[in-house]
Image (cartoon, rainbow, N blue to C red; front, side, top):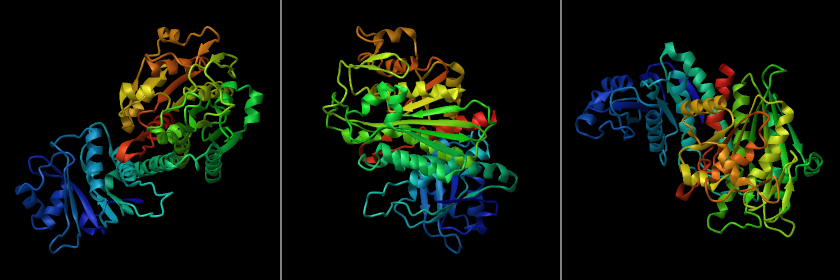
Length: 495
């Protein structure tokens, strides 16, 4: 979609539809008042007869405007006449863009950024418009013969006053970059596992390096991982005919000697559970077990487009987890790159095996912080549902920074404890630690396992098992946590 900022008056803008806001108690936003005057009081008449109450998220599309060059007006309810919360602002935006689905409307002017949002300026409000519209119009068609989508929107113009133009333009740049990163992540994650293999993920990373000059990519093959002693990682891929890869992206936007921020994304392109085979119901969704890796790639798209002055490393351990005569078995003892031995009690707890060796590998970059993101535990979905991602870590400052970024990005996280008592559940009679800690506190014990390989740097873990994709009739990737990571990196760049 084409996005732009326009400071001209509404009556001078050419589009298929203009979006304006109305509050409860029949109160019009400034742009709505202007349109009301230009249409002989049409909007006021609609309010007076009760066609819209102004409740947040209500919409009324006026398809015919008598004696006017304006083709359509969309009224959007904003709620009580007061500063909106960030969530209610986004709710109104989603209501607006969803109204255009299954219509022929191709170009839209949005004036909703003029509404006051508590704690946020024009830059943030503009950015949210782009992120919300891009997210809502996304529709997967790559493997469909019919490429027709519900929405025909092609152009979005954001109305802004002259004195807010610079902030609006900054929001436009950020919003476009983050929206591109989210869309990239969703397209990659929604692909079936017979297309999106570890080798395919590696090819996409190489394509990113060709597109953005500040990004370099190297691919470690299984032979390289054998030389490094990545016994845990390689054990996962033994049951698959697809060779494992360790994808390394290097974005150099900061000072040459400044410590990098390392992002690690679990890239399991399909998870059958291995010998501990999953049940058939819902197994198709295990193509989404690579959403952490997809989100790292999407975040690199966003940061490269924004040109952030930071040094950032992206590591994506990618494999399949399949049952086979050579697959690792419950009871096997593996030796990690760090030298710690791991007893396999459940081969379906494979993500932590990919990640533990990758965390050890991350030490060679002398990182400032390390953040891993993974669709790691079903327990996180049970505990938190599909609203926040789980957050755990060994550094309060890093975790608090991620919490703050999540509020700004509207990409929620909830911190869980990482107490020493939970480590007791990982004790093994036959190895340094077991790969699972039983039914209790599964998300926490998974993070406890990872923490034993993150002792030499500041580290945070994002469990995105409940937030990386939607299920049911709306099944599809969400692109999270690209907005959260992008905001964290923006904050670091501005720090």
